[in-house]
Image (tube, rainbow, N blue to C red; front, side):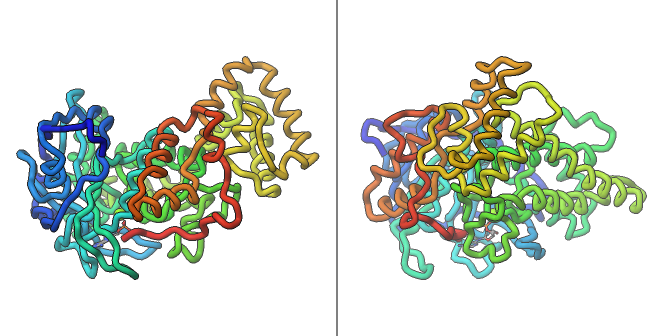
Length: 488
Ligand code: AMP
Ligand code: MG
């Protein structure tokens, strides 16, 4: 943390509503104190956005962001939820996280302030309730990168090391991340209430969620149907955004799907270099369930679980309720395809609608697959003509495609606007796996320079800088990261 920052007071502006829900929804308990907390990262710009003031020294901040001292107004709790993990239904809950409270910004926005790695809770099952430094640095880096890519995401306010060792395959440094989220209500939260067969609570949860996230739906006749539709829309947008920047979440279990439509839980997530829809990095995803190209199918499956949870409220007649749910899930394919088409059109700078757009999109994807092209750099090439060492450029089929595409963006539309749109849609910099792993490994050894540099680069992903070409290169064979881990 920079020396020039001498914060002297943190003041969260808490107004806690989740804590007032019926007690089956959460367990009230404080984080478990740690031995020797040290603040290693603090997100000053996020603190500013949140309107948090300080008048404390670094030591005191370390106590605060480790949970050793609770800020006034906090009402710490661990949330109860369930989830389908890799297709299997499991009772879960915050096993290593504590929501401190809901902070209200000066602009009246509400955010959960949550500690991750803060000790055991009644939902810890076999876990130790703790988190290791590496995965917390990873979440910090990637969530901040997602934010800069203009993708809805939870964010990271601080990382502290705990001064304690935690045992995984080896002994690792313990750490706690402070996560900032629109809320932590998940599909799994609804599944939990549905599993309890508590229709009154289900209705309370629907009302609570609408009040908190979608107040424009308060007046509709059936709030549950409206909620199902809204969450579907947000998830369709989110997954298209992920696919726009080559993001693979890696663990799209229903407990990791935020109702507010934010990207949440950065475990084994990774960005794909060479385009291949079958790409998987997660070490535990043996069958490619959560591969890049399977993400739309999986979100549809998850939304079907959401619809199932809501059945008692979709209609008083159960058969009719099931039909409403099914029809909604059946409409997903079209909804997603349309949104995906629009997103790809933006990536290619296609402003007007022409009959051959679909062919143009499908063709470039198949040419990228055939030539093992770097996804990010190929779209950037269409803007700036730079694409070092790509097989694609020697493929006559691609050269033909490029001719057609160039003609297309110059006909019926303004080329400058097309380029402008492409610059905003196609990042120059993504968190390339080898760079992320390298930065974290150095940090763990006590050298934070490459982490800080990478973070700076990722804060401006659409602004190309000639001095940063190293961050645009896909990994060399020796640098290649084949596997990522859950970080649990
Ligand atoms: P995740 O895969 O990170 O979404 O976590 C799935 C579930 O496992 C959640 O209920 C977590 O709270 C729980 N969990 C993950 N790691 C730990 C840990 N070290 N101790 C206790 N619970 C954990
Ligand atoms: Mg999770």
